[in-house]
Amino acid sequence: MIGISKLYCGTTEPSDTLRYGSHSGDLPSHLLKFSSDKRPVVVWNVTRRCNLKCVHCYADEDNHAGDYELTTTEGRELINDLAGYGVPALLFSGGEPLVRPDLPELAAYAVEKGMRAVISTNGTLITSEKARILKDIGLSYVGISLDGMEEVNDRLRGVRGAFAAALDGIRKSQAAGIEVGLRFTINKYNVDEISGIFDLLEEMDISRVCFYHLVYAGRGSDLVKEDLTHEETRRAVDLIIDRTNDLYKRGIHKEVLTVDNHADGPYLYLKLLKENPERAEEALGLLKVNEGNDSGRGIGCVSWDGSVYADQFRRHHSFGNIRKRPFSKIWSDTSDPLLSKLKEKKDHVKGRCVTCNWLDICAGSFRVRAEAMTGDVWAPDSACYLTDEEISETV
Image 1 (cartoon, rainbow, N blue to C red):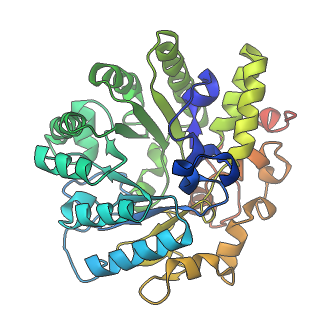
Image 2 (image 1 turned 135 degrees about the horizontal axis):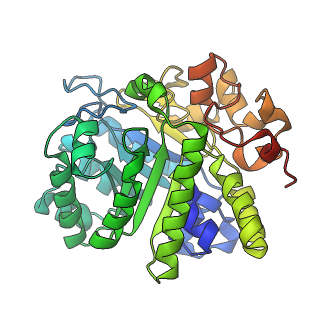
């Protein structure tokens, strides 16, 4: 994640400790679980089932429930292991996590065990009662996915009425006192909707938005030709920066992030270097702490069937299954060559990444995209839009 509002505008964000890190010795007791000397944030795809049919779904949903899903008991055992291992945050995702009746119980158990619990949802199944329950259990945050205004969103999500239902879920969550953020996956079909999303942030008083670059996984693999060109990506990132800065100048505090393309970090720094050199150096320091892509290192994934992956997108290489061995044991075992190399991915990237002066703050960006486009997991990420001149800039 690249904190646009944090890096460009210098704001203080509630998620700073998770993204930029801080040693436990420097944190108050209530933030110790977020310290940099702890363990990875874990995404748990609790189900593959979903009530929508999103064209870019990395999970490639399946609406038939089966015994492949971890049971409630297995889920509690997983949470026990993650808590004991020191995992600071558990993100419940899917499919659509709210199709599982036991989701509130599992989220409540994660909170009880000292973890920050977050839900990533399409928002359409959030009722007033469900929002109240989620608030009562101590849920930290709900991330609700929208991919544009009504017409575009419903087309991309495959169900008419999805936009209206998601907005209703946002209102019900806010009424219950739950912090809400938006999640938006950028592609050719909806890039012109970015300004509308910023307008919605302001109109509905939503505190946070994450703009995701497209990852070629699941159904997203079919959208490679619908991804933005490098020049289109630059324009989209410029727009996100400009709209974020506009909010900041008007005294409206929103947390704005981009996700899944770490070229955004050096791009933002080089932009700041021309506009505000002092701010640029502060941003560079934070980017160095952030260290770029964290797949297989600072983030891990447990799938609906218990398989452990480097992240929620890489589902073609499992490191093991928690039904056979605890996550903590799997994650700590570097006998798997890929897991071992991902923890030190900067030593294994190839091509222009090797000579790139931004490698320490990018870590080669997304290996899944590189492999999808070339067949080589260590090839350069095809979505890196930095020019040869920009990657040669002195850090």
